[in-house]
Amino acid sequence: MELFKELANKLNKNNAKLCIIGLGYVGLPLAEAFAGKNLFVYGFDKSKDKIFKLKKGEKYIIDVEPQNITKLIEKEKFYPTDDPKVLGLSDVIIICVPTPLRKVKLPDISYVVDAANTIKKYIKKGQLIILESTSFPTTTKEFVLPILETSGLKEGKDFYLCFSPERVNPGDKKYPLTKIPKIVGGMSASATKLGVKLYLKIIKKVFPVSSPEVAETAKLYENTFRLINIALANEFALVCEKMGISVWEVIEAAKTKPFGFMPFYPGPGIGGHCIPTDPLYLSWKAKKMGFKTKMIDLAASLNRQMPIYVVERVLKAVPKPSAKILVVGITYKKDVKDLRESPALDILEELIKRKIYADYHDEYIPFLNIADIKKKSILLSEKTLGKYDAVILATDHNYLPYSMLQKNSKFIFDTRNVYKTKFNNVQQL
Figure 1 (cartoon, rainbow, N blue to C red):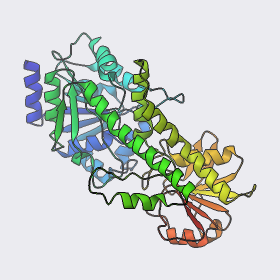
Figure 2: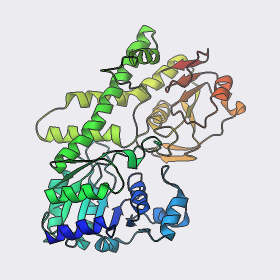
Figure 3: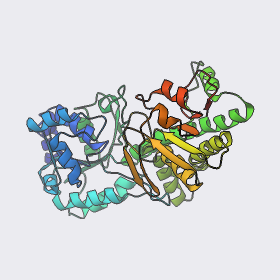
Figure 4: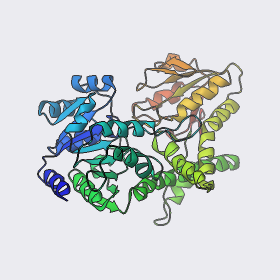
């Protein structure tokens, strides 16, 4: 009880030292938010390149401006480092490491396990440890907790452990990290109370739940909801195309209903870390327990087919064996420098696989060197557009010259409903 009171008192007085493990799309905005509220934050990342960029004031995360980080470093409120010894100097440790899917669609929590093992080496009495990395239910209880307790310390007595799912949406100006309610589920009641107290420093609404498993599952449910509804929108797009109906007009009409409907939109596939991967963590866990998640599996399968469908629609419209195709926008969402699970990459790979000449344009990604794709982004101009038989508009960045594209392209397949006005050379998804 004394350890609990001591840490609670440090949090009340802003004297607690934090350490964020993983300075990516989740960890760096979190570090900025806490340091901006006058808490001292260590930023620990094994990537020397990230640490170098932070100290030099270089930008690599869309939601964090380098000058803000530089000011926090100068004020001695933020200290980025690749030295794990800072874990032992911290009162609170928050794990924000990647949890990708392996190629065989199995969860990969190796980064979480590695982080837990690193913490174990430096763990001390009275620390609050929080996992934010998305994973399958029971990850906190069955993986992180046992590793930490091999130190000889016990959760709820010597240290405190929570799961609090990240809800970051890169590039979202309306809902930055500090405006999104937080869920906290602790292994013990004391852990939950400390977690809530911590996050209230930067977020107005923090919702405590009874266990880490509830918090883990809530995160997966949120993204499963989106996965299934996007799949439904994609399936409607396929059906509407067969019937000669605009799916976009259908959705606009349907969303005039003020209750019982929420608009989701079709696209060339799904990307980012959350929607393509998170529901599959739940699916995997369910299969381990002898239950098949039919809706999740079907939705995931349909969404994975969309890049192939896009290529087939384009090749049907431009049936030349020697066709040259330009993919415009290669990141997974507009105005974000992020290639994770991008369907545009799948489109490019499918074209290459079919031996179709293909290039891409994206100012956010000047070059690609992924698997079989080794290309440079081409410049958009009237002259270059004239070389291609078709343009696939895969990601609708705001900077793109849409009028120039339409006027100088022979054919455009618009997967994002950019061209709401009908043009003879534009075909909608």
